[in-house]
Length: 154
Ligand SMILES: [Zn+2]
Ligand SMILES: [Zn+2]
Picture 1 (cartoon, rainbow, N blue to C red):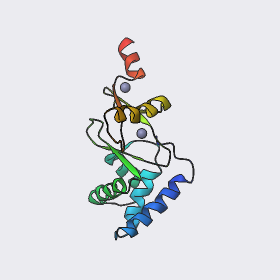
Picture 2: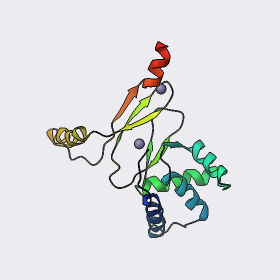
Picture 3: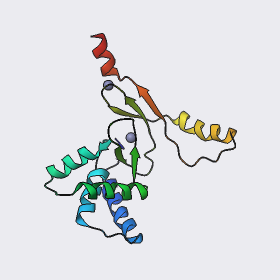
Picture 4: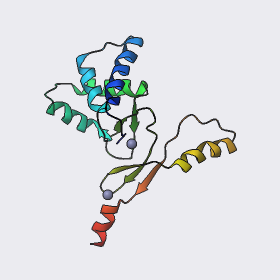
């Protein structure tokens, strides 16, 4: 859930088209359809889920085009790809100010998001202590979610 405000997904889609043009990449209807699904999503989507949503919209986009468009979206910085140690990578839109970290349940595969101001402030300080100039980071906590813990207890 990247919590994009309404209109933000539209704006990102516009920026992606712009980015494609600047990089000499054709702006096709299929690329547009894939980008719209990912940028308009509030989940961390797998390629399978992206295909399901495209099909539900009646869009026919080949798997190669889906992968290629995802690569371009990630390159453009508008989408972030995650390897949460699951079968497939997950993708989520990156709007302005959508900094957040993830909790990943290793039982059911659920991905939860959290934001923690103090943590975000600490990370550059830690990097600085090592004389390191931070560019980006990701914090991923793996374990068992609340529902799965209950399931074990019940
Ligand atoms: Zn996320
Ligand atoms: Zn779980």
